Image (tube, rainbow, N blue to C red; front, side, top):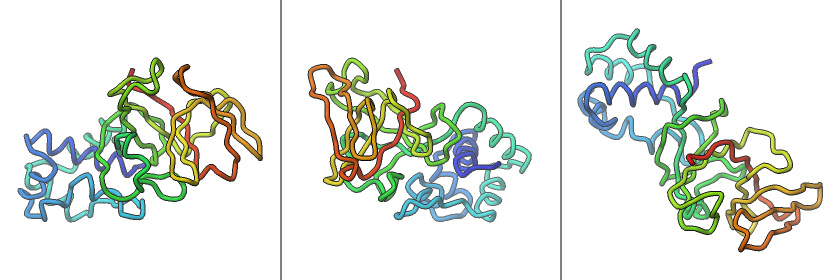
Length: 207
């Protein structure tokens, strides 16, 4: 099944092969320079925006590429990599998610990383040393909202007060969540289930 990320990855690869940025490719194709920008790929309410058939056709013409080449680029992007939205963890509390914990709004970049097939997966960049030794400054973690969570998993969660944290899930009941801090110097947390806006599993880290 063709995914949103595969099509955009193919366009990025098309631009790279021609020695251009996505905006440079759009401009050469006679389109608005922002047509292929990463910020245009997810709408303000978190919905996926796909490139139009016309814009893809013009991009192919501008790079003297065939549809077969584009299909090959899709195939190359489908093997082991997926382009996912990227945000600095320090910015994660600033309204960059919808109520379900999916990326929304502006401010997201993109990064190609090994990920599961969850098309809603996204990446967060760790800043500071608060999560050492598990995660260090500059590490990137991939979060998959669609992956089931089990005891012992590392997770990202947001509280109803807007706090975003990275923890290990020790225990989860219908009433509460027991969370272990990744840094032994920080206290563990126990939250009422009603105080958790959303929780998602960390499935990969660039360590």
